[in-house]
Length: 250
Image (cartoon, rainbow, N blue to C red; front, side, top):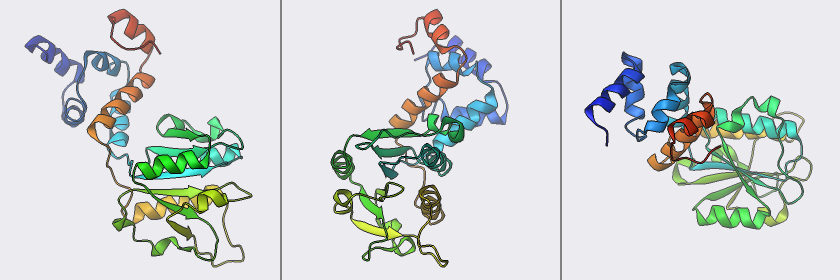
């Protein structure tokens, strides 16, 4: 694809040393090299590029979450941060009562690294997730729910954990579509935690049992890498225009 002179320029731009060789194994390996990304990457500190690629290499798509009609922007922000910190690639949200909102300051930029899939109704969300092969686990205190620790997550290929509204919980329509109902056992006076706390604890459990693991396909990794690099680059519009790259102006 590139001539000897171009390859030499790429090596010069990447720099030398062990850290560069690690980056090359990702960029130029799983992620195809392009002239546009080579230029964009030079506007970002190498440590930042390495961090982005490290995070992306650990992202998980086979574990997802769904938030149905969450109303508190504080809770929304904490859930986004928790999903990012645990390595999730996707959050699904149902918005038939109100749009999903989160406090950007509390999210601390995590929303840039987690993709939010929005659905107008629970029916639409369940239909899409079922079509993609997800097993739906609903968080609820119903009598037929089981402790999350009793679920054998290693036997589930794709899993989506469902969380409901802060006051009403999950709707009956989505509960009726769940494959399993789960809860977090409490040993104190209270029966349950705030949704943001429950959200974080359930995801942490999945991570400790080894269910949240890197599994993005190379095509997805390449697409996300391009997006993250362009969003992080300095003056990406100017670079695209200057070099006449075949990419939509942001």
